[in-house]
Image: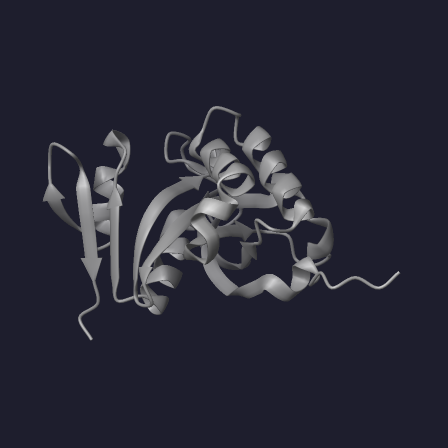
Length: 185
C-alpha cells in the first residue's frame, strides 16, 4: 500500500554542533547533533513527542509541546513549528526519545518573525549537574532560529533569564520576563 506521508528522515533540518564533555581530556569537545522537525499532522511524530515528554519527566515544557502539537494543530496550523535536537545518528524514521537533547515550539508571527513558545533542554543536561555531559543544546536551537528569522520574542521562565541574556536577547519587561532578539543585518 502506497502512502503519501513523507518519511521522518526527510524532515532533517541540519547538523549542528554541541559540546560533549570528555573525561579523558577533561574538557569539552565538539560533537555534531541533528536538528529535526516534527509534523503535528503525522501520528508517528505525535507519538514521538509524547515519548519525549515522558522521557523529559512528564510535567515539563516538553509535555506542553506535545499537548499543543496533538490538540492544537488545527488552531496553530502552518504557524506552529516543533523542532528537536537529537544525538541519534541514523534511522531517524525510528526516533529514540532517549536521544533527544532539547525541543522547542515556535509560532510564526510573520515570515521573518517568531515567538518562541517553549524551549526545553533535557533535564539530564542542565547545568545543575556538574560537569554537564553535554552543553550548548539550547544555544544550538537558538542559533538555528537566529539564522532563519530576523526577530524572536519570548516569555522566559524565571530560571532561564540569564540563558537568554547570554544568548543576545534583550529583556523588555523584567516583571513579565519578556525578551526579544533582533538581527543586526
